[in-house]
Image (cartoon, rainbow, N blue to C red; front, side, top):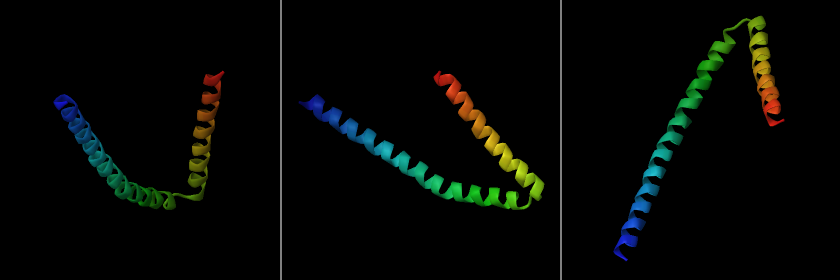
Length: 75
């Protein structure tokens, strides 16, 4: 009986520790991601229209390559 009680307390402490670190990570992401978005937007707005076109084209190329590789691995 005493061992089960001790195990349940340890389980509860592990849950609380997980929730604490999960909360810290989520809070950090809520502050870091918008700041990173603003930084990326500023650099993107500073590009010329040709470089903007090639950057969007590059993103599409990466997504297409990822999709093709994923389809090839599923076969």
